[in-house]
Image 1: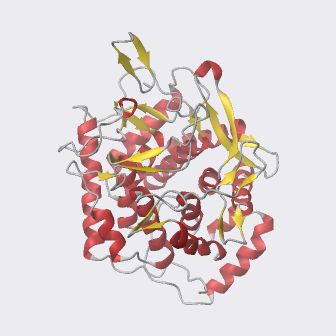
Image 2 (image 1 turned 60 degrees about the vertical axis):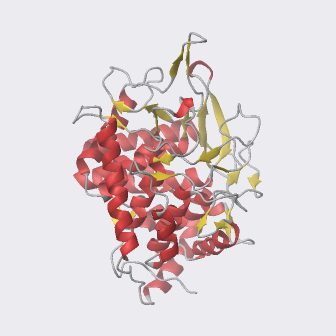
Image 3 (image 1 turned 45 degrees about the vertical axis):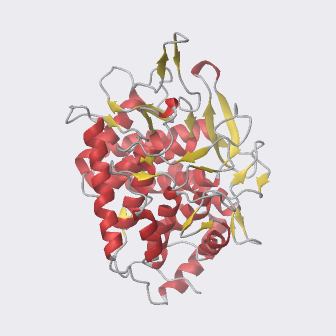
Length: 439
């Protein structure tokens, strides 16, 4: 099983035993999608294609970034924050590109992938092969990659956002995952080479060997004063582990990428909280003290989704999710959430499809109910929900919220869940392909 190549030695014996026991049991079967799931697949794919048509602004070809948020045609929901108008977050675009592949629209997916490659090669101030957290939505027509921002006529100055021009490690890993998915679909050495460059940037700029060894949060701030984000994230490290293992397999023997995958996956394994049967979210600012108070939904789900052939122990995090992240028929971002997070609820559906073959009909119906009239899906049914996290080190508190705005990332995760496409592997779940775990 391919995931074994990325599992560290300390975990390998347990993983082998788990995999052998699974092989001796009947495999679970991906169930035939019901009517609601099929409708979601169709409509979410239509929403992504509509976003491409709207943002290309008459340019039917060439590199393209999609806006992460856009108001519904009927203007429901709060006014869009000025800093988000026209901002194309790298993570959302990576997801959208992978989802477009799942939707069968390779041409549109390639346009987003080409935008990522161009952004790597033509950064306006940091020519080291990174990607930023966000870019300006639309066709890439300028010589340098355009960063988000706006002109404030009253202040007579250009206003930009420090987080958007920064580089978070997980966003770099997701850009690499998009290029790896494209390389798999197109058998393109160029996309693979660019993905490996991104993984090289992660290794060179974010590796933090203080125990627990792993990769830190990235770099934050303006180009002339960026500072390292010294905390380490479970979510970031599972992204790196899967991307590095994939690149090592696809690019022939590459011990550096194998080691990168082992390092990142071992960090994730160390974040497993055996007492509570769930993942800790990562470390605190010192990069060493494990943060045990908070819980992020993606940190619980992504390790389970990323390696469906892997440890059965990790599937127990799904019980934690049910007890601590459930909100009505969906799931919230944080522990004891104050509302439904549509994107995370779609992640839960995708994980359940990957592990159990299907998701509850009530969850599919909840996701379907969040469709806006512009084809995208609302980030939350509530006016606003909290995450318990800060946007960046300049924040004075937990100021990272989701609002009731149609969201590219939520739409992409719904498309991935409804089509049964795993962004960490580039494969659709097939009947009989899901290993069973002991109950």
